[in-house]
Length: 341
Image (cartoon, rainbow, N blue to C red; front, side, top):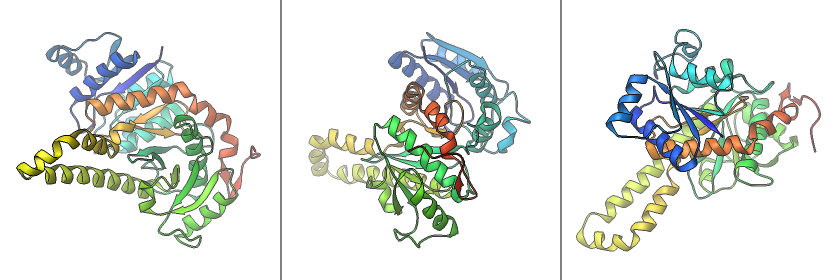
């Protein structure tokens, strides 16, 4: 039986949304669940909302990581936090995956020092962009400064993840840049381009921002600073487009009447732009499944993130990445170990 560990503290959304999402996931997917956080707060939510605690355990935590805390606080000043306790539970075998919507920097540090990385790899967030053609963006926020060799490793981890999770036998890989020409970009992009051309990935070259919505590449690699901006811009534009359409169709009696037959279609369109449909972003390169949930997630988004984490566990993606880790690592521009054909 798969067991999820969910940190219910430190995010923008109320803990009650995360608890309801966990209850819904247990009921719908049949998993076991450990909720980590303020035990009194968690129990109050169950009582006030009359929620079932079947297959759900509670682990008390004396504190939690705030968005203002430094990244290393999770392993130093706040070793009693919900994030630290949840990660330690995962590391010790007390669950199959850990999910949190807390401080991203702290989650990266905690996963790296408590759960540990796969040897030789640098961890990176892999977020699925919410469009018609799901695109995996690596890195979407973990590393603001990277090397060209890191981008090659991101491409290879992303390729394995995309192939297993989205059933794509040979995922295409693009390098996010300010133009499609080979000579575009900073020295980082130019050197990464040369490495990716000779790497064992289906590299299609540079992709631009507007290519993110077209499905031109299954996996898009970049540094975490650029990736995080791209991700949040895509989410914001999607929400704005959906909201503007709803407002336009509700301005008059005539437009409201015209919208009635389209209501279902509009809901489907809005859902395509909704990042919560694809669940959380896995922290690729960590030795056990760690998933970042959006900080403002509601109960439905939490349930979907848990669904994604269940599939992440069951597909064995991490074991595949670990088995191929010697072919994923580059040092001084050259692969460490033999490339597998």
